[in-house]
Image (cartoon, helix red, strand yellow):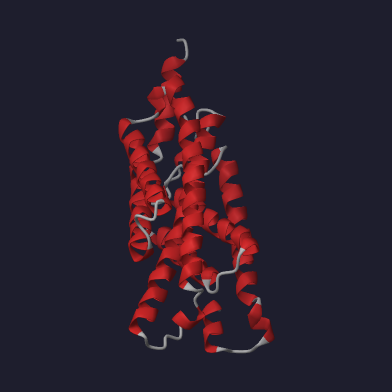
Length: 265
């Protein structure tokens, strides 16, 4: 619907129809995550489908919030396209949504509220980074259109390249802030119950955080900007998304086993 605007179709119902569709889809997704949260007794982050949907939910939520602060043409179209495509892909993958909560020994996904807060903030920051990747892609498309010096029907409706670069740095700053808070909260839990955190998860989390932090300081010091910054932002998001494959629903089972061992016989 949003792309129809690039053809200059002046139809009154079309003006806000894309936003209405995004809000409607966001409402359905929020309801679905809420119902899954009731099933798993916590924030639904126990398998690949749940984590992907939570990231996509965070992506749309961040877009709706930032839309109030500044307007970027076609940002909603890119975000909705990514959310729809990724959502359909993860729903079509068999085994991506194992019903771990149906186990007879299952109680709840997270051992306490601190680790649940850590996980939810971390995944929310990934949603912000996904929006950063979307804006970086828009930047590269606009830059290519400007360098080609040819008329581009899509590029002519994209925001100015300077606005995209500023928006990217702001999103990077917000994402690094939330991811840092997540690591601090997770570190407080890990020092008390290190058996709930595997070494590979700890290493990957720190690598992702270090990557985005380095990117932030390089951009802040004007040492990395433009197309290189956009490409690094996109690459880092794919690395962060891939790192989620090392986290699976067995974490809940390990927590159950740990609690069983800690209980007096």
